[in-house]
Image 1 (cartoon, rainbow, N blue to C red):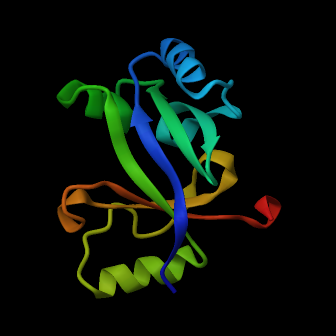
Image 2 (image 1 turned 90 degrees about the vertical axis):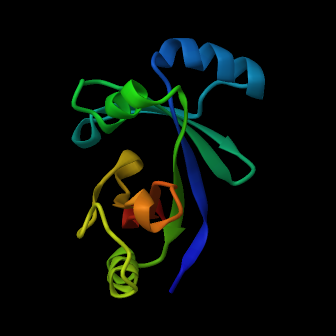
Length: 138
């Protein structure tokens, strides 16, 4: 068990179109993938960088965690996502260690992956996302 690799770094942006212009220029390429994740009320753009991804996140609703984050903070790093082999086992392990989970059970996130969040109070102030590939991810 444990973390396999850093999957992505989530970056909250107020306007995805404007952020895409900036990051296309910074990274010298277009986003690799853009999708809307209705469950999380966000539109996400992904840039693959060195085996991991930068994920730009724009809220699609005022109830979105990204909208709430931006209401309290400046645009910037929102969360760190790590890939795990068995998300249910990792959630059980972290809960058994006394960490506060936002998600007791995984839900479906971007790319159809199983995801769950660990509260920043338990991780030194960093919102931690666990992510597990599905069969279609390979």
